[in-house]
Length: 414
Image (cartoon, rainbow, N blue to C red; front, top):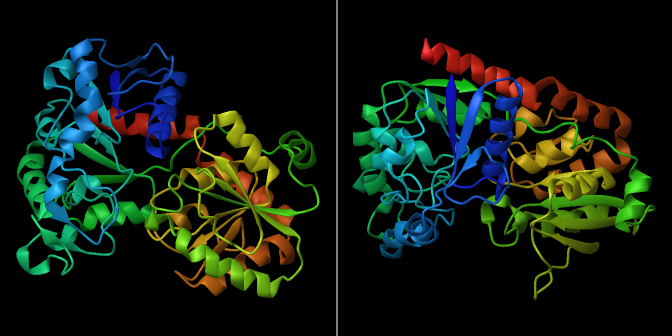
């Protein structure tokens, strides 16, 4: 069996890292596998990107070309919108690799168009890293239910102006995705699986749930004091880690809740024994006063640097509004670090309330603060830490993930 994994790139972003890790996991259990990307950054010989100079140029401009319709659409939903009308690759390029099965991950940014996806004749497994496959152009729907009932004029959000891009993209998907005859959708969380089954486009399709896997031998618990000494982090403070790309700009990641939450935490714990580290963004020009000393760890960190940082902290906080299966949360759990988040989306799939972390009432900043304080000062921290690691060993290793996917592949090929 030859499996072709397709993702826009092989390392940048949570979906890319998850796709690459799954691809390597498949190879490790003996599945013949290649990965096809628009933009390659690893040195992996089994990752394929076009060497043709013209194709390389097309892949560079593809995100800008594909995004042109966004100029005629104004929405209060600030999440990424991908029209997917343009493709930097072709059906011929994919067919030349002669796979028995195609595994699609995140293919936006002008890589695979809606039309090209519909033309793929091989069995397809599609991992749902966000809501784009069954919604309009938006990657997260911002609380609307048009993906369930259909995108119509009478349910267009009042503050959306101009061309209804989401309706146009959804209508294309509704028409073209009917051609996909042997398709299995895989959701990393029960929440995403429910959304897919509720959607108009995929309501009759097979949907499975497989948690994202990671290298648990790299993301593992380490001696906290030793790592803090290496990273020059205080050994006396309780360290809270927060992390997401464009943390201060991406409202879906919930950064705007933290200032109030930390203000509440300050009232609960007036001692100056907490310090904050922010991963995924550099220090902004206009600093945000969280009430505690704040350090910025930046982005573009390699896996070892990330694993060391997770091991050095005491707690990971993820205040997302909408989330599928946050890589940062399960990376921290793998390092034995409890996590605190709102009880939304895929968070309950990872965080077992008061067992390996704390699930706060959605968007209640005071409860979020209570959860942070409980983990750091009032819980049986060693038990939380052990449970966090045990969850990963039980559900999220690369081998477990690869075997679950192979079982799906076998059922589809047969």
